[in-house]
Image (cartoon, rainbow, N blue to C red; front, top):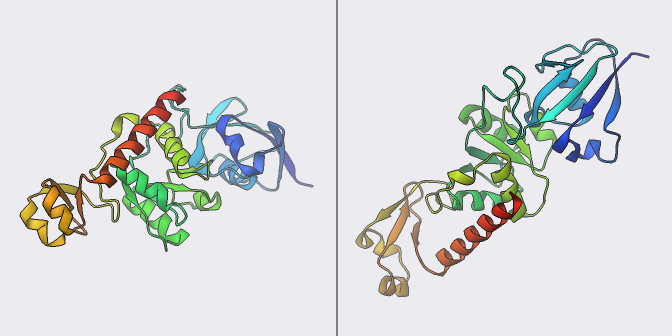
Length: 252
């Protein structure tokens, strides 16, 4: 019949579909001595969202073998909670402020770039490619796919609770405590390259006729050479950023 252990998932970990509607404590059946990480992910919670694991009242890491009768409490990352030294699995490896997004998050990628965050996105990324980019470039994976976050090579990741881009952006900023790190209009919305101010003469051949007449301040992506100026699109982006700032303020 195998052995059993009791698991309790705290806070935002209960957002995951596999735990929805279940009791806060559940009985996990197993054979052999699986690592506690394997048990947590088999239940339905990906490892990048886990910050602290308490086994029989003591902190352990993901490799801890599970034994019959163990009582396991699993805690999420929480910017408002401090843990004693040695408890947090993420303390020595804080998440970087750069991201890679799955293929369904194009609007979120654009919004993150608008706020100045280094954001990799391609509409044909495979899960394997995303995991590779995350590992080799030390990026946080953002996704609506729980299974993607279970890749062994992914260290940092977040499962977006909302399906709406504006709400997703607020989630990311709050979860990774990015409010004080916004640098709007420094990233290319199309390719993620850095944007720098350039003389009008150097880009005049790329400008529409009316833009040549009415604008004199221009910025260009250092990678794809796309040109930006403070037209109506700039005003819309400013309004978007102000709306996000208000949303974050109300969430505090």
